[in-house]
Image (tube, helix red, strand yellow):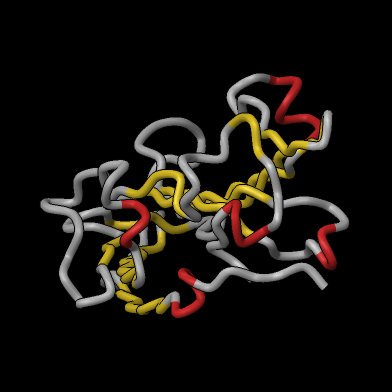
Amino acid sequence: RSAAAPGQLSMSCTAGCGAGTAFLSASGTSVSFLSNFGNENGATGPIKVTYSVPATGTTAGHLVETVQKATLAGGAYSFCDATKASCLSTTVTTTDLTPGATVTTSPVVFGYLNSTGTQLQSAGGALTATELPSVMVVDLRISVQRTGATQAKPTTYLGRIDLPNQQTVLSPR
């Protein structure tokens, strides 16, 4: 189960868990959310998942998946600062999902709609803290093109991810 709010996970979180919503941040080039994937019966805790197209660095222009495990201390989960080396070596895995290709970020890679189908962001900007709990649909638009001397025209993939369980609260077994 992905895009699960802390209350849906029967957890207490002290750092990096947002304001009770499954989505922690969302913009035209990045989305970050809490997930219960791989957390059978609450045994391992939630994970933080981020999909982004960085503008700089070794993965600039690539679609990158970052998965961060939570740590449990004092009965509450938390996420360390993923920019620190100590955090990266123990709890964070990063995967380049488009090696050898670049991703076009214009107009946007990610779009967000509420339950009535209204677009939540304008011009690819970041969603506000009041908009994040309203996300019910994530639109994905990925245009990729091979890097190198010989290039075909870009290929565009479109997808719509509906989140009908976003408002569901799970009860412990």
